[in-house]
Length: 284
Ligand code: ADP
Ligand code: MG
Image (cartoon, rainbow, N blue to C red; front, top):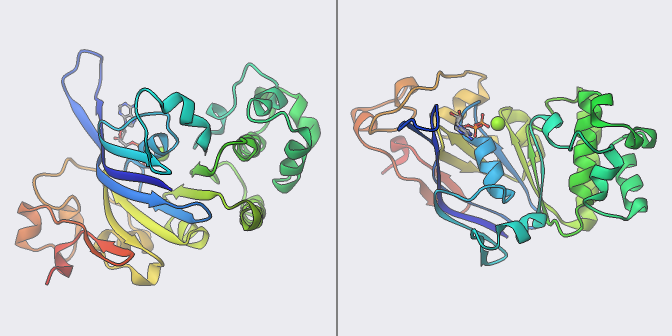
């Protein structure tokens, strides 16, 4: 299991000497078990990619903890544990080292050529493309090469897909996704599907975390359970502008149901079994 406990991430805003900060993640707690498909959804700027970099052990949290199979990840062991989690980045051009031929980049993950070719066939990547350089591939081909590389990592039990379908056309998306599900029947990866598209995430995932301005505002099993006004606005295809929130609920300015308390006080995440919501409307 990957487990995040009260994870925050703060970045410096602007130049190196600037004293302004942005809190990209604020107290996020979540877990992903092997064999599970977990969705993370939120609009652009919500902190999804930051969460992905922490989940895939590329960065440590500013505060809070991350554990993999019970072991805390620290500055000391983060590099050696990195192979446990594969990541397919939002931008395919950053997933594969441009200086290597595609096959050599994938061989960093495994030397098992049979496995490489098998996974290429599952994501419809023509083998001859493996002998080209990343710059010679289209965005969609490169994205598939990045998926192959992640799935070839021998020690990886978890794979994070950050907006992985953005470079692919719909029919390729459907094909790859159904093949991923098929792969998981035997291999039991923990898959994390991250997207701004709540319907796509709902389609792919057993459980969903909704993230807004760096905070998890709702955890749910299916969209029919959605209670949080932000989740509902995502389902209805509405978007908001990102503002710096004051001391209250981060969705206060946009929420059609906001009450006085919502402006002044931050709601806690209330939990009932595997459902949780951060909204005063559901406080008794
Ligand atoms: P998403 O993937 O949901 O669009 P990100 O995690 O990329 O969101 O970004 C969340 C916020 O953190 C944004 O305001 C972004 O500008 C900021 N941010 C992300 N990474 C960095 C970084 N390395 N340095 C400074 N600010 C960052
Ligand atoms: Mg992102």
